[in-house]
Length: 169
Length: 169
DNA sequence: TCCAAACCCTTGGATGTCCTAGTATATTGC
DNA sequence: GCAATATACTAGGACATCCAAGGGTTTGGA
Image 1 (spheres, rainbow over the protein chains, first blue to last red):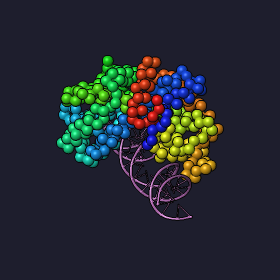
Image 2 (cartoon, rainbow over the protein chains, first blue to last red; image 1 turned 180 degrees about the vertical axis):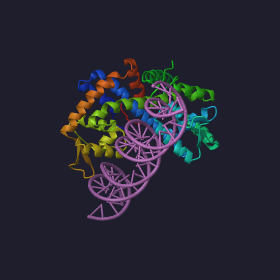
Image 3 (cartoon, rainbow over the protein chains, first blue to last red; image 1 turned 180 degrees about the horizontal axis):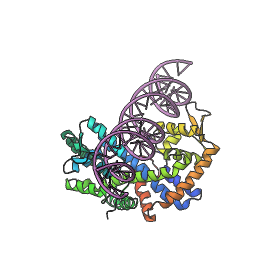
Image 4 (tube, each protein chain N blue to C red; image 1 turned 90 degrees about the horizontal axis):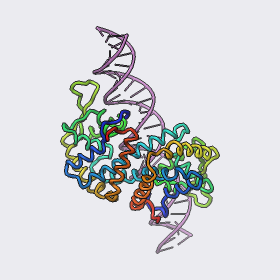
């Protein structure tokens, strides 16, 4: 995690796969491993930018989601579905955001089972600042070319749809 | 996290970005978010396949790495570098693999600071079986077309090199 | 009407990742 | 040769994710 390696470890793995007679799946293995590693790198960049705001990516995502909701509030189960994470992960994030006074829980007006999460003024303000920082420091410097970005969006979009994330077209 | 959403939440986020005047970084934002989500889906598939073997992806990666080492043994710091994870993560994985008798720690013959991780016969055997399962159930059914796989390997390879993972090429 | 099934959120537990520190061993430089 | 610096691993803590289970609320069919 400090010094660069002399050779690409994923390319090495791919060669090992081929050498062992698994050439038919060596390339997909390499692509999948590369996705895993890329996610790790991106997450680290994002967390670095968010740290000064006292946010993690999980908490930021929730704030951002709420900031786009008309009323600034969403049921927890809705947030869980849109963020595509387990309900307990949302509970966890809300607990911490609530402790920081960035969101507040409130009972659903008609359904006693449901809890609404609501942005506070501080939460809305912080979301805006954090988004500006991420846009400038991460999304604006992704290192991907425009064509590559389009390709990634298309290929990964198909993948996610096939995986059952959504039925959109 | 069961039912598919009616619409792609990442495409929605991209539209929200554009609507708020951040159109210049909306596409990279969407691409990066898609990578994060894709990683999550792939990891879940991998963990599902590995569960019957009593392995997690982190532990499997270490076993696979060792199985490709000539002697079946590697220093922990080497494993950390090749897997590109923090040294404490390797300690964690080795602790559990050792408890399962899949690897063993042994002192480095000449450097007293270094600990070697060594595959046991059980570990080597399990690695082989787990790899076969992953090849059949995940890598062989990635859902990515051949051209997309090549593109991913190339684009993400460049990204990882630029990020400082390796100096190859 | 009323009870079982479905749904929503939370608690508790297992894992993994990283960071910060601390201990032990090597290397370096004066 | 010895002290200062660097390297290797581990311990403890903060977070995130998921699963399994439990308690409260709604819904729906007998």
